[in-house]
Length: 187
Ligand code: CUA
Image 1: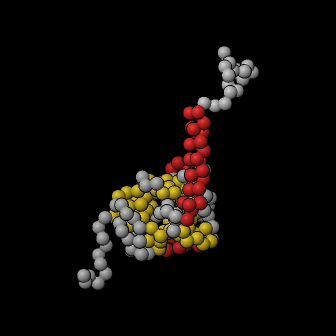
Image 2: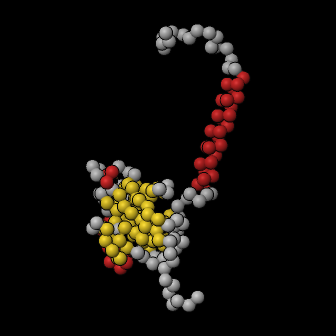
């Protein structure tokens, strides 16, 4: 039987086999590559958010969000307002225990500035099935320049534990394929 108290049998104190040494060297080299990638990814790559950060009093953020909702509201989804802002506009999404508001209806290929903030505690904005994750922090307006590249329905899930109903904190983003009517109409 092998226990930690008995020394193993065999000549384990002899230098490692050549294959094992090569394996350790490859593993170490790969560690160094990944280590170097950390600062490189910070400087280069499409994964970096187009962050525009500002502080905001939670109540002010709520006020902006409700103003945004009242301006562009087009419907209702089980009591949650559905808004369809014009391309190029500032879009507000607030998280709080335990809901995301409003439901966003966006256009594929159009650019928006998405403002994320929380009214109470830390929440996590996680967009499924695409793998997009952002922290939603009270007191901070996290602005992201986004351009939806895919039409369909997306689910926002909270990925930061925020209390008893954390699992139920689900929101929706709808991306429409068709272009909005051109203003003026001359093409
Ligand atoms: Cu909000 Cu978990």
